[in-house]
Each structure stands twice: as structure tokens, then as C-alpha cells.
Length: 250
View 1 (cartoon, helix red, strand yellow):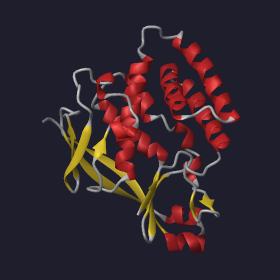
View 2: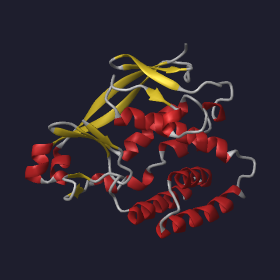
View 3: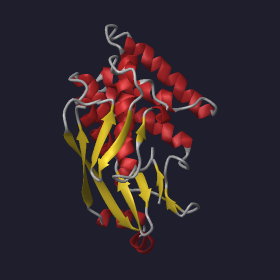
């Protein structure tokens, strides 16, 4: 099995005979579930659960990459188009919450480089947005709250990109800030392991209570994709609910 994370397209797990596909917005909603276990701030929760707003329309019709003979993923989707949609998504969220838009902007400028001209343009434009929006809420702690967004984004992607029981979690391997930047009482690096096929435990105990997460997974037959096109096969599929129990406490 090979796994790819789709920034412009869905999160995709390629199996022998089918693709497991997860919408970006479903992944973002799951990020919000994790965030709700760590904060009650409504603006931070909104930022976490809407951070992939840009992909709503794009996920409605997945795009086939003829050269790779597989659905497009972030590995091969044109950077310029990706950044245009990043910006569009932040613009849309700013109409609803200026603070959520600020966190999204900070989040995406951490994800993108500045080597290409289009990347530099995006980065410079977002720095101007960040300066403008930070002036509207001087009492906030956007860097700390962005660290929380990055953490829950990483947790959600982990459970969307890997099958239950398949792999352990290491916060350091995700390129994230130390856990203490989100939870000052934690000085250890965050790790996690499967204690059963559908049950996961974090160390140290990130969450105080046990809860279930639900991952809607669309299973798309490769044969149907060949015969009817990827978009046609996708429209014929229905999501299956992957349920995982996150064990809280020690």
C-alpha cells in the first residue's frame, strides 16, 4: 500500500484494488474534534475545523493524473494553483472570523516555501494580511494558537493517512513545535500507539477523557475508475465510517 496526502485533492490511500479517499474538509472537521478536547475558545475551534475550507469545491470532483496513472495529490499538483486556493480559502474564512483567518494564514505560511516566485508572492501577501489582522486583536496569542492548530491538523492527518493498527505516532517526526508550546505542563515528546486494532493511546496522556473519532472513507474501485473515470467512480461511492477510540487519561 502506498499513501499520499492530498493538499489539493483528497487524502488518498492506494490499496491493491481500490483507493481509500477522504475529503479534506472531513479531515478538518476531525481536527476540530481533537481541538475541542483541548480548548473551549470558539474562534480557535472554528479555525481548526475550517482550515481546509479552500478544498470544498475541489473535493467534489477528484482529478486523475494521466502521467502518474493515479489521482492527483499534493506531490504533483501545480504549486501556483494550490497557492491560489490557499488564499481563496483564507479570504472566505476572513468574512466569518478575522482571528480564524489569521491562524489559517500563519498555518499556511509555515507550510509553504519561498523558492518559487509564486510562493514568494503568496508569502509576502499573507505577511501583509497577518500584520493587518493582528492589529485587530492585540490581546490574542496567535503563535500559540497556531501551534494548537498544527498539532490537531497533524493528529487528524495521522488517522486519515494510516489504517487502524498500522503505525505509531511521533510528534517530533511531524516537524511540529514541542508539545509544551500547546500544553506547558507536558515536557515530554508526544507519541502514540495502538492498544487494540481500533483503540489508540497517546503518551503522555494528551486527552483527559476517552472519546471516539469518525473518519468518513470513500472506497473507490480502481476498475470502476478505469471504466467510468475517477469522477464517475467517486460519485457512485458512499462513505464508510471508520471509528477509532482515543483512550484518555493515563
